[in-house]
Amino acid sequence: MSLSYVGTQLTIYVGSAILIAGILGNGINIFIFSSVRTYRNTPSTFYFLVGSIHNLLYLAINLTFRIVSVGSGFDLTRTSLAWCRARSFFLSTNSAISFTCSCLATIDQFLATSQSAHLRRYSKIELAYRIVLVTMVVWYLQGIPWILYQNISPISTTCVRTNAIYAIYVSVYLLLVLCVIPVVVMIGFGFLTYRNIRLTIALAELRADRQLAKMTLIQVVLVIISIIPYGINTAYGLITTGMTKDANRILIESFVSTIVSLISYLYYMGGFYMFLISSSRFRHVLSSTATIMQFHYISLVVTTALLLSLVDSQVANNTGKQLQDKACHVYWEYTKDAYDVYYIGKKIKGARASSFQVLKDGYSKDISNVYYMDKKLADARASSFQLTGDGYSKDISDVFYGDKIIDGVRASSFELLKDGYIKDAYDVYYMRKKIDGAHATSFKFVNDNYWKDAYDVYYMGKKINDARGSSFEFIDSGYARDYRNATCVNQQ
Image (cartoon, rainbow, N blue to C red):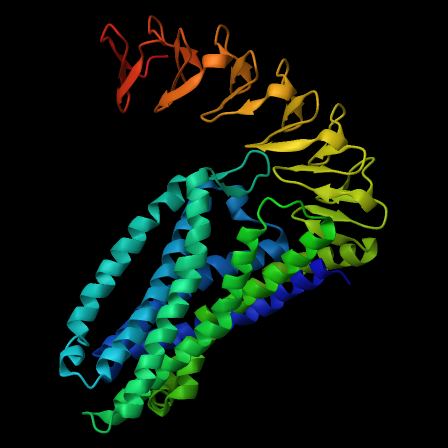
């Protein structure tokens, strides 16, 4: 039984259990915190309410589609650009708002249990309303680049990041905003809250304050258990980016990532159960509303049955095929057995399993040949083959884009520029078509899709008539001039 098969089964069945428990728990949290007067007027539980809403949205948007994708093979982000972008936006905003609310609840309990009357004055529901409003606006604005810079790759047909700076930002965002900062803030203020409780002898409504503090502190434990492994795995992924990895290492890392991702979902699922364990008041409120909750259970059972029926038939087929072929997962759509390699179930002719390596951008190779998806690149030399980025690759003599050789480009001096441009020692190309008359030695970027050489100016691969490269300069978005002060507006 391969790690790939185990990972698939865990994602489907453990993921489904987490999804069911998460929808149920967050739904009950939303009902209790929005309907019970004592909780509704308390800042910490208001933060719990907002956090539960976004936890529910996160599970519904992310985990549901992940289970369906793994179980049935249908991934909407591969076929719908709108969903590719919308999913990225909602995942980034929902997770950030949820973590922020958990941090705010911990900070509020520090303020509420403080011996300082000045600090206790900041624990007010009116202030909590304003803070949550600002928080949501900030994180929704932050999510705009997740819409602008996500696209479906024509090479791998996956939802990918299209901007290098944005890709770096996402990596930093995942590590800091969703891992390091929440853990540090919640542990720090959780400790201070615990110290306040130990030092406090008498406060108004002491029992309610203590129970809310316990509910908040156990959230800290949940974050430590569920998020720290995710942070460690994210940091490892950043450190090892760009390293050449064999198929076995990729397989192990993929399996570990599956386990860590499932553990991280415990944060979005577990709030209700932590509250249930830590607070007798919460248990009492829950028992008094048990009849109302029956409708919630029935709705959840129906949803679960539909979800499992969707994936079970396809999983059965996939499982039987995997056991029959004794194939192990290599990376994404690649599988192999002892002798042969397959791409989406189709045998790659001539590929040697013993030396097969998955690269990036749809490329792979063995000791003798190079492949693009399931096709052998007849003219590519494996010994000198290397990726250059943005779907381009080269060996000692040729340059490739996908499975096509770019005619005329000299591999020895090939240089990947940006905005669709490449060049070698003598010629310049735009979208893999040679620009007649462009001088490679002086060809350089100006601004806003404008490029120039010593003599001419180009916009999106086309020469701008009468513009002089020697004196051309950029003025503002869409506007530029040369020595005659003639203004050019996106001329082509």
